[in-house]
Length: 94
Image: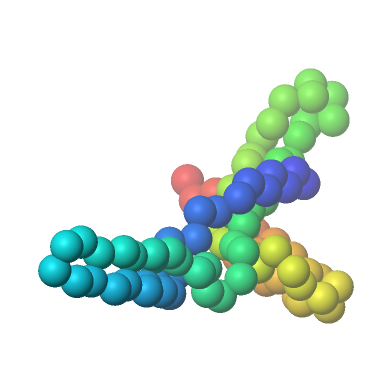
């Protein structure tokens, strides 16, 4: 089993703006605050390898988005669900 994790750019933000204006000009500040916490992209790969030839005979891959900060129980439950989902496609249909 191989797991690859990369950072997901969070596009969910709350915009904040402050402005003031007058006849001769104006001043403004704006910015975005990320909401929902940082998310990560996870790619989980399960490979079945022939022990004699060392060649991959079947591979299942699942990509998902996960929270960066998770409790150990949440991680374990996530992996159980992902592995079950990947193995639903095994054995391959002929």
